[in-house]
Length: 317
Image (cartoon, rainbow, N blue to C red; front, side, top):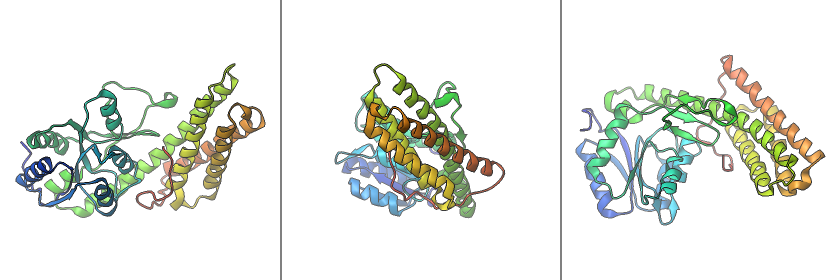
């Protein structure tokens, strides 16, 4: 059973292209008191809904019209799409293959159910999410519920930070203080942004080390060289987008320079050995140092400005 409470103020999105399933899910939500339900039947409608509206609860199929909706959830969690990253998200997987479900889980939904799914089963899983939402893990490439059974270090041997996040459904069901919910969302979103930047700094140092090792090998893996180099480009771009409201010229310049040299190393492959590789190493260390400087300021109580969801062009971080 769904816990007692007032669901009338919960803003829900049902993004399902199958009309029978969509109707069943809509009626199930109405039975527990949801009145504000937006329906989306194709990928474009989903994208527009996530861009233009703020939802507390989302029930989505994993694919529509060959569009993998998990990527939209990933963008949402990374604060690149929508008003905030914290709606409860239940995804309905259209395929049961392990690698597909793993890919879906890695996008950060709160829960994944295999189709076909009964509406009452969805409500049962939603009960757990309303009563006890899992804290989020924040790494350079993942933001979402902690699903680790055992403690595992992240890249670089450091523990991935955990973040207690707002539960907008529970907040609306059990309290009326919408101002308090908005304050919580704003503060935790800001903390998430800082953690992402911090993890990017760790990842930059790790990628520098990996590239130096690749170039020193007798038979360098040029595919991996290019992949790591382009990952540095993506990370630098994401840091610039997340810190644009800070107007920190030194950090922005360091990231621009890292983007430039990482592009050149990726294009050059093993021919980058020598001065260009030295320039890349210097660029990595400069960007990491600027990130560390900004994180130290935040640790002393400085709260950087933020601009909501990111609007800068991004890579794949």
